[in-house]
Image 1 (cartoon, rainbow, N blue to C red):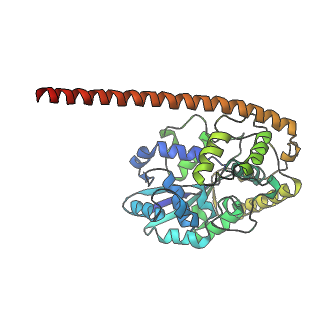
Image 2 (image 1 turned 60 degrees about the vertical axis):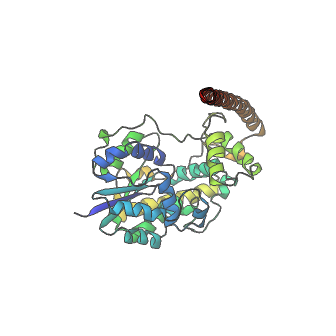
Length: 368
């Protein structure tokens, strides 16, 4: 039997962070069961996704960025079992790029794993994630580019399931494209993991899993407030700045209020999302793809009872901003106290080292 190479390619906002946490926490246990997770950290998989998609921004990333995909490949070729690579940015790869991935793994049967949810929900969540990463366009103007671009990890090519199925299905046999539908509120994260593990021919119950997934959501007031803040952060341009400060500190660091009021797109955008979602359901129903779950969970709907971000009032944003400023002041005080404590400890250590050095010097001089 040939070895198998599984590429978990997203989709974003479908439990990918949760699954990746399980995979990296259980890397040694996976290896014991014959599945290699190559690379030292999950960041290597991110860099490999940029490499595969020939993204010119790879060269501006820190660390070893010479050939991150080939580095993973060489590790996989030395392994005598199955391998697994996971990052949602792989989804935007073109059919030609996927073909090169297959060619780079001789002796492996290449599979893709896609976790998916209804486009009417996913499109809204994807815009929110983009805002949390520094985006400033209104929800009905997202994505910024309407045409397909494999280097645009935030564009339609990264989360339009029908488009991804067609691109990846041309490079792989449809039966080797495994789709795991999820329905937030009706299925649990643990269920998603068990189905994911089953694709790998593993018993998911034999692995340690976190109690709840990370990656919290913002409410409609908070995400609209953040969208208006982002244009003022024009010097936060690097991926590290956006990830650490806009997303990590401001959006997900307990600074903004945790209200989580769900919201919707405008009528035209919602209609577009529904049409794309229906096309994906039709492809999955007739295209020979391996669906691990109920394809009807991907049927899009019209959530008319939710608010649009344009309906958020200035008074609501002022209230959220007031809470955010108070939380930010507490965070700055805490970080300052922590810094000062570390500086005092360091000065004390340096003073002790200096005193010890003087004592040693005095003893030597005395002996002399």
